[in-house]
Amino acid sequence: MEQSHDKLVSLVEHYFHTYYESLHRYAFTILKDNDQAKDAVQAVFLKLWEKRSTIDEEQSVKSYLYTAVYNYCLNVKRHDKIRDRYTTESNAIGYEEGNQLVGKEVNQRIMGEITALPPQCQLIFTKSRFEGKKYATIAAEMNLSVKTVEAQMGKALKILREKLGDLIVILVIIFS
Image 1: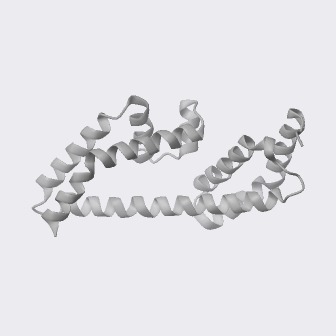
Image 2: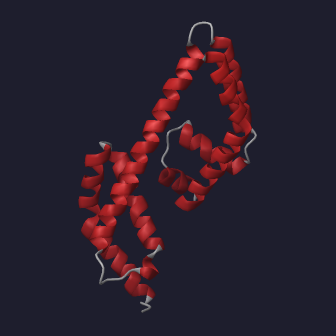
Image 3: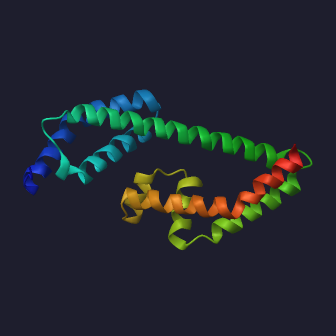
């Protein structure tokens, strides 16, 4: 059953006003970070907005929203854990005594590959990885959709994995 555009807009607005605060508190209990919690809820409402034409008022939108926030928060925590592990490992490799030259060469190679990314990919990657910005923030700054930012990050990571894959093997051989 197709609903009118105006009704869908007011329905999403209603859900936003009804559930935003409680979803934010829920996300904050998981993430322990106010900005990350806001980003989580905004991303979920953005997804709801994108799917507004398929909203079924008979099903529990509240349940969908809480589940989506929970899953988004788990992904954020997983991403943070991977980033922290990468940072720890990078620092260990790059700054151990005697390994500074190798660390410098590795860093130069990585930065060279980042610089070689397509311009939009490079900018989005830099904002995310070096400035620590969330996808929603980058999307707002660059006037893009969050999906576009996600796609560009995926493209950047795929290119970097392809270009730097041999680097991992070399580092394992050198430091094992």
